[in-house]
Length: 249
Image 1 (tube, rainbow, N blue to C red):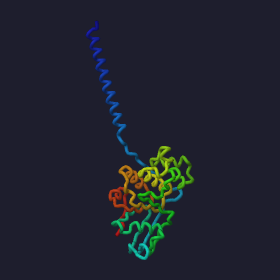
Image 2: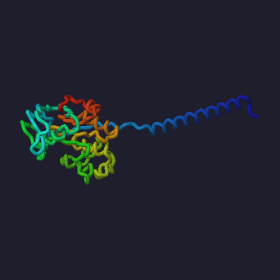
Image 3: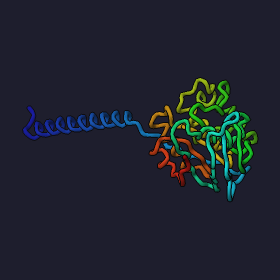
Image 4: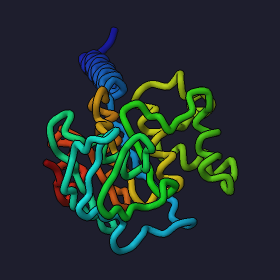
């Protein structure tokens, strides 16, 4: 027959065991909740400036300029300059000539120009638009970066892509045409970061981007070291990438 002391000890052990089981269950519940929490991935981009340092002084200037098509000018009296590391937003309603101005800067043969235009060579201008036209649809992320930086080893390309959240083998070997819009946006910026141009032109790149991808784009553009010209109606986006001045009609 068990003594009163033995019974108390047994009850204490049962109670202690129940408490430990309750604690263990709470711990498992908390771990399950943590696994379901979506922690946003942060991009900390690195820009390769070994081949070409960031340009200094005035990158581009247009004095008394005009642009148009055929024999008709649609925008006259353009006076615009962009200096080293300056960020300029082109403003104006749709159809006001912003895209035509960009085409003029890129020396599009369909655009007629007048006035004095001092612009960088096209090879020193990077263009990023909402359709990601600089990406060859049948090439992989690995192939695209290797074309921009042929001197890089496979490991260096993987490291660069890793900075832009391309971390799995299937992500870097997948054809561009099979990538999501967010992945194409990040790859386009990885392409630019591998060989930064003297002037980066952004044309309505936030159209159709989800919030997370837009945040990634902002993270990258905040760190971009060169001059930038931006066409966008998204005031929040322009504020987040720290636009220096506005120019428009």
